[in-house]
Image (cartoon, each protein chain N blue to C red):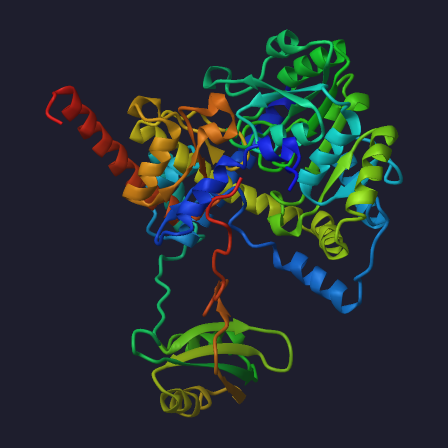
Length: 396
Length: 178
């Protein structure tokens, strides 16, 4: 047998996967490791999908997606951010932002071209660039900068081969948000070096501090930005796999071609559900965001109280506390916490090297569960402290 | 200057409304949440939370803190009936008077004045079918001005106070996901 492709062979499987395999063997685990809403998709969205199936909507759609859905997306982007995207040729309905990201990379990259990726970042960014023949260039961030990439970092990393900057605020895994001014400074650097900006704004509706800025709103950003967004997080629709990309007609045309030959179109039932979501579910969306916000304050206060220093995440549904004080690595901490106290978190290094020393705690879990998880974590950290003192006294 | 002040007032009012809404949502989910916990979840001080709860209680927005009990599980089956009551108001005796006569009975869980063919919608709880029937025939139907009643016994409760009974939904998510 000849070997499989070099890239497929060498790209490591997600570090999260390994953890999932352990957790799924155990009972009574409280999981703060889940990267999706704990809410079920609002009933009216599910009902709209059922109705469309009853009416026989089971066919292919346009490669771009249903025009009605694209029109709603266009209107939504206009009403929310004042953006103008022609629904005919500037919006592409994709199978999740994950597909949108893959299409964007394949549409813009030539072999060997570099993509700057601020880390800690979502697990699929680097592999997506690799699969598209590009070279990911990680830019590590720290709590001192609020896990935000700086214009200086970007400028320093640019080479003649740099093609694009991939950013995502609010961030998974850190929950970091960014101000309009900071974002404009980043756009200015991208413009100076003529880079594409791929902006994954899937968590935009889950912004608790200040207001979310859409990248293409900013000066000099529109013509170089590929905006990726979707329905998974805002409307609790992860399993529907439905999202969209918005950009210039040239870029969308290129992305559409790849989509056409590989995916054909997003499932029509998900598109029908998305129409109901974007038309009528703003209130449900806001209510879920308010609930996440209450949990956010609870978990951040709880973690800091335990001694796991945690910057205040302005968005998404993750806290990213430091575990450095414990002297354990992220993986040791996560594994021991799981085996000793049955709380699942994700080790920070799954999101890039600079995530070492941190863990990701998702608060897409009910308040009661969060309270219990915090109690267990407190006991775990206290016991570690005792262990540490014993070691120090040489009485291990 | 005036418009600035006005804006400030408007945004302050919105903040208070959100604060209130947060408290109500938290207490609706779990009435035993302490002011200290609510303070954390809303980003306010414990004293602010206490004051706001006191104000909500005083205004009657928070009426009381009750416990949702599954009496069937506790081995104490309860029988509920919805009773539609047709009332003939007469001089000096309006709907309110009849309603009052009815709602004073401890068996009565709720009373509404409704539009349509009948006037009052009464919800009665009893330990048995017999007890509820007896209440309707002996107490309710005999009230002056009550012209007619229709009794609907509750056979099964699917949802009450936004709470779905026998909710079979479970967390189907992968326990660790990106």
